[in-house]
Length: 353
Image 1: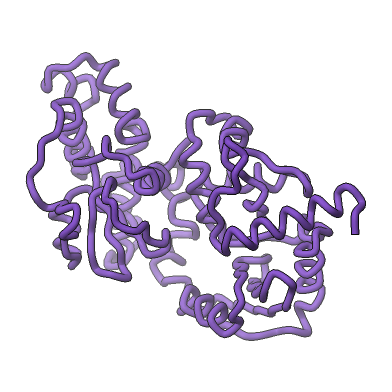
Image 2: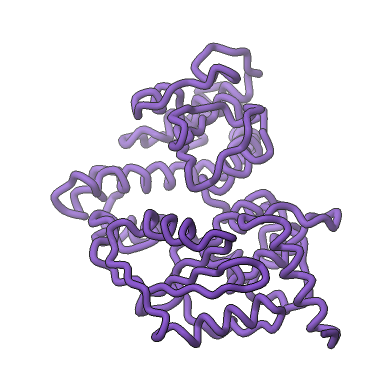
């Protein structure tokens, strides 16, 4: 199942004009929010937050983009305006009306409204409603005295309902999320390769973060910023075998498959990542192939978004995914690195030096 943020990010990447009025996205590094179809340079995913309305983005302290003017009135077709209205209703904590009731009130056939909702928003009305509940829990956990209070305030009927439908979107237990991952022990090392430095970070449970680049100091700074509330220590001696595994993988000799992982992601992202690990070294798949492999053939854009959110490069081999036309597509650590990794794996696969 596609998550709401997955499809919203995919809409931003595609500059999807059909999503106008359904949500806006804000860029934390610039303090500006835009419509999904804005022609401005695409931001990094890690710097993006989504808001249902311009007013919500403004209330969060962001300024409206002067290029796409997301806070201004603009013409929308009647169907998109209706879908936006349904979204606003589903965002309300106490909302109880069924889709059928809303369709009747708004003058639409329920089946048609459901179909158009999924086409425009990217997820079903039920998934959208659950995503809004989970978002309210995220916010509530920061101030509520107990997890149960935050869960109930968010509109879940019981803590059990939250754990079944919302907890997976947090990426860690609710108590850990509220504490910001405080006091997690993270150890890291790095190895210099022909593709640049590879910086690997691990918890006691497994590899949690991998970064590739030409500047080791920058990679370490970015990692420490990501885990700013953790206890981070360098441990080259303790992680020497892990570093050697990555060094061999960069050369095309895949040695990281059996390394344990400690990564957080949505249910959909984890399904994609598992599919990527099934792609043999020396081979590639298209985003459409991966979507079909996980049983979601229409979720090609969301698959691409999940690849971009991959926190452990190489060990989850998103470099083995190409566009349908055979071109490389994007890669977080640079298309040149992606091409080099694929070339090395291809040479080893056919026995070339």
